[in-house]
Image 1 (cartoon, helix red, strand yellow):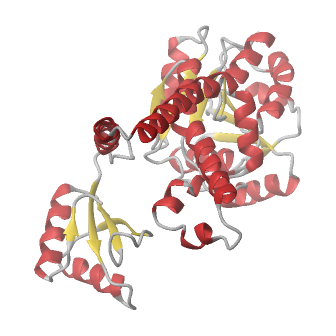
Image 2 (image 1 turned 180 degrees about the vertical axis):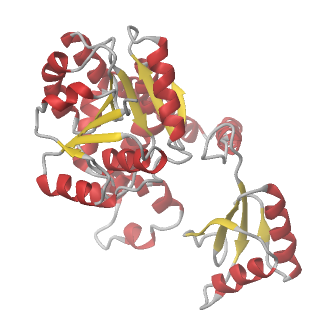
Length: 366
């Protein structure tokens, strides 16, 4: 029986994490890879993530059932003529980029549309490279799939099954819908955060009093402005059509807000803030997808040695398992908030009772 063969071109954070996840959940699969950095490829082979190291345009890619393009977009596009002459008609060609339009158009130009199913795993880290890749990075993360119109249903279905088998949540969209959606919920916020930081830098006094007191809400809303300028320049240039469209709408809303302030229109300002609050509050707190619930509580704690250890010990004494725990770094609303996530609703309710019995202030929403 032939074993499934999966090839990788590029083994950075995302490519490496996909490869490690496949190795974890499908140890019988054969994985091939090429990396521009030889030391990365050597490391992947040494760690038994990759079975077969490949050269840049290796004929072994012809044996693959799937090929993941995990290099920068222009590099991925440069490989398409080679892959057109190499892969079989049954091979699924995919990528992992956060903007899909440019790749879909390039694939169509070389005649690989019947093979291509775009992909965007919505997972990542501030760290990069294979050394920071993890086999659990995709777990409970949305994985957007953007099939070409010419891709057969059987290929799309098999690819979605592969994605799901790695612990991710497949979400099938057209590439146009994906790029528009990302322009709104990802690309626009980065531009807004950067412009807000630049505005405060421009408005600040010589003594930088604004910078001195900037904390809490300002730092929270502008956190993503610390992202890589190189990456975001590329994203803006490759998704400019949809980014421009959502910016137009956002600018109109800013102009409207300025008008309401200038006019002192308190009623309409209230409606603006109320609508935003209601919509924001309606956003799901379920980060793992539409079918998997989160069971989370928030506990006020004091900033003192042993504070977290005391709580985790208390929960352990009550036979309550914790899925995840972290501190919410926002000191505007109290002395500290601990976010605790559980595997099941029963454990969450039991933990709430145990903590309240010890006079902790516990909330179900932050």
